[in-house]
Length: 160
Image (cartoon, rainbow, N blue to C red; front, side):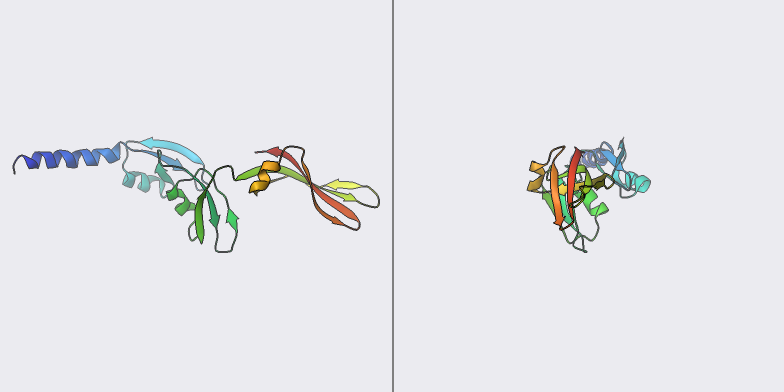
């Protein structure tokens, strides 16, 4: 019995120190990586940074998240813990293949059918998801709608 006590204490000491050797990735409220902190326990990290942290070696995934309003978002490179932090109260969340969505700079062009005059709207950066992404490239022009007096197109300028 006396032989077990030193082994138990050694195990207890080793398990306490193991938490201190963990490195943590710290994020801001928008999900941007800030810094990596090592040699602190999880309770110390939580006290210092709140909920915006996870283990630096935690697996990151791409997600499809459905909000209570029925909207979808497709965040990438988030751990399971951070999804729970940044998307509380979601209806459905599922891991998806990364690259499912792409961000593109686009601009809309309106062309008058009768006069041929045209006007551009300001450049916007938008996210497109699904199989359509495989057909996008810089310079691609897609017809959005056609009315009796105008044609509206979107030009894909640059992928981000």
